[in-house]
Image 1 (cartoon, rainbow, N blue to C red):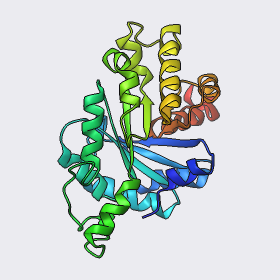
Image 2 (cartoon, rainbow, N blue to C red):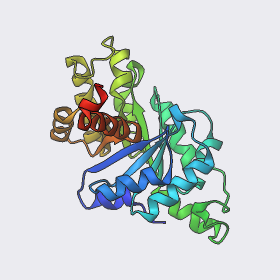
Image 3 (cartoon, rainbow, N blue to C red):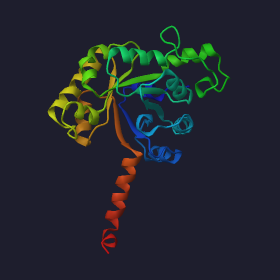
Image 4 (cartoon, rainbow, N blue to C red):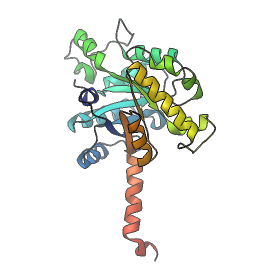
Length: 258
């Protein structure tokens, strides 16, 4: 199973992605695909509680549209990692990782032996629904894209060690939670948040990892690009729908004033 994210990164591209959660539906994925310019999406299981079946449908739709996909998930149990990866997504990202020990454990949940202890099951999408031999599935699973979120003081305190975890691909910044952790809730553009972002960028570069973020506007996205960001989350289905509703109301402004 090809990995669109790895292919784009190998070509030197910066990944432009969107997130999907509250309204996880194939039409939403196709609408982003038809708009052009995106490389893929991440599914928000942390806040939306997406099911294995929802992830399966989203992964199939993503592949059909030439998109990469991953699941942002809570750091809870290895079985949830297995369910997500068996849905056919290309990777997973753990929210609220606070230490190198947790990051390493998450990587081991994602890898088969000898690096990890992911449970073997060839009946999922990544096993071609039992058509792929276990050995082949295990070999191809080395391409599973693995990320962790940096969004707490504890993660910042252990940042260099987290970045150095073997077979971890990405550090992903959650600026909203990071701002509240740093005492500036709702101010993602605050200097102390930017200082943290710059630290993550440096740690990723020193360890040969990529880093990503949910930027808080065009100016912040451009600044992150200058700092070497390789995965920008540019909107979500809720964000897009809200902007569309606002645009419709503006188009028919006088009617809404009646």
